[in-house]
Image 1 (cartoon, rainbow, N blue to C red):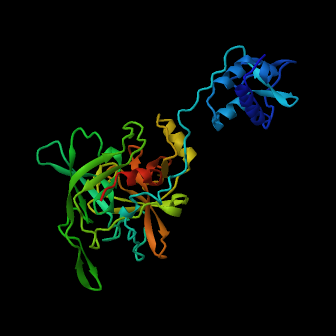
Image 2: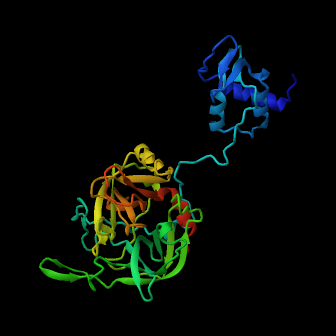
Image 3: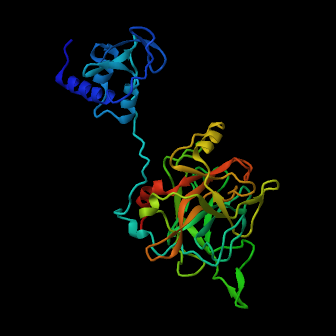
Length: 389
């Protein structure tokens, strides 16, 4: 049989890879063997197997690691300097992946818009401690935002999603909060809020009454859901709202930090979640006061299996947290932050927003059913691409 030099190089390259594997195919007689899909074949030298040669000739180069592993599974023994393969009678079908999945978060340190994210962000009030679901302190999380919608009735306005301040003109939220709204449309964004019912948020500090500056209700200038958001799968559940310029020089309105630099690759065991969502799953009652909760990171394999049973496939850009009795993010918390604490370059404790509340079971706070969050670090390039001064 005659081979072109180009094909020979390809075969030699694949042989070099194939020889490194163990010959794990079960040979059930002198020549017979099982193919990886459990079909029958004959154990023959590589270049005598026409289906394998045809596959090697048709594959694009360089051959991906995924395909090489699939080819390795056909080996059934050594053949001098080469190998034998379990050769089927029918053609071998190898579908090339359209894209190799890159699970590395993007490095945006050199991005043209990196300076649009304030370095003065996420400062942690060390006097406060997050325990179970409870009221947050005034100004404990000054980056929290409330998205207000027009309801189905004329003149009806409702807060139904959360978000976070990332600079003076942008709110980070979930795509499902802002994409393809059918029964309502976004009216505005409120920042600087603590208790929705109070006209002014006040507290006693050193026996004196201290009150916050007024809330800021911001006009929507642009709605930016991720273009590949899946409404059914909740993939790429991230979005931005450009709003009228807010005043960041007040203590109740400050930006949160996003995962840059070494924060891209850190792992963590627990996270903090905040929002004004449902506090009683039996009645659907929501909170007027900002709530906070500390949640454990859930085992990804277990969480994936849980949602697979409900025909939802999780991917590497998502993370699970919670699944603990009465401790969870709930409806109304969507779009809000999943945060961790860290130490910045000035050795100051700060909050980093590692995730966005995406979805979870119908009844939150059920043991074994964690909530799912979009991992912010995988979308830092998209976020920066969509910012403008």
